[in-house]
Amino acid sequence: MLYGPRDVRFEERPDPTIIEPTDALISLPITCVCGSDLWPYRGIAPIDGPTPMGHEYVGIVEEVGSEVRLIEPGQFVVGSFFASDNTCEICRAGYHSSCVNRQPGAPTGSQAEYARIPLADGTLVATPGMPPEDMIPSLLAASDVLGTGWFGAVAAEAAPGKTVAVVGDGAVGLLAVLAAKQLGADRIIAMSRHESRQNLAREFGATDIVSERGEDGAARIKEMTGGLGAHSVVEAVGTQESMMQAIRATRPGGHVGFVGVLHDVEIPGEEFFFSHVHLHGGPAPVRRFLPELIELIWERKIDPGKVFDLTLPLEEVAEGYRAMDERRAIKTLLRP
Ligand SMILES: [Zn+2]
Image 1 (spheres, rainbow, N blue to C red):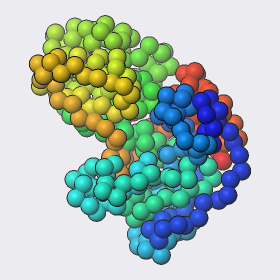
Image 2 (image 1 turned 45 degrees about the horizontal axis):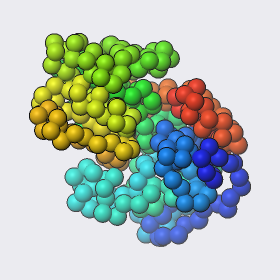
Image 3 (image 1 turned 120 degrees about the horizontal axis):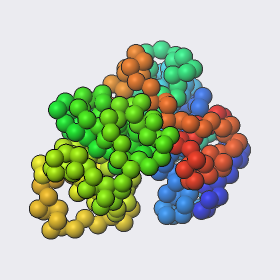
């Protein structure tokens, strides 16, 4: 539970129950802290009283409501941070995170042993069977950071023949590197100043590392691309500096996929008009990509769970937030 800025507490709470007939209840073998949890943690995104935290989840279905048809108790499932019906026009177009029936994916908070998941049939995707224990962190990564990095790379139109630059070396940025590699990009430039994150970026497929940021970072990308800029840039931070760095590092006709939650960002209209850069992003429709991502993980073609570099018991959740806030950890895994 988050009580206020930098005040996360582990406490006993009543187990969630089925409320709507379309709900499922899941038990979570592991859970985690998200970079976006740091916005309310730092007091930048205000909260309205004590708030249950966590929106990334995988788990075993314990119980389903009377109208759930596709999801059954005993299945291992992956969902995402928004619940969606998977049937409306917006979902069918692949934009589940703007579903007409959109609601929080884990309203009871998923940094917990149990969670209630609304619209279970539309939101949850079952794995082919019970996953081996070492695969579960990668499935948990698919729930948000992998799905979000993947959307960033898709929105930036990463593809064979292209140079992709990634702004941001958090879990989402690192997994956007992995996604760009899977999507066949020729050259992948990770922008990072931290050695351990640079190493992971290389492991995920980065061909080049750029440590400059802001204006200097954009200039460096242009220098490396014959003065033109990258074809595709993924923005995975969400600040004024990082967004402008992404736009300015992109060549005319190129694409920015922005997936860092934007906070107080203003894009100068005239500069943008003359840039000829496509901008596409927003809250990632992770549900669109889940079947494909689960398959890649199941076949052990990708191992996105490597972004978890700190594991703690759920009771020590406060230290998990602190470590990420101080950038001592890329992403904290919690064991209930
Ligand atoms: Zn929908």
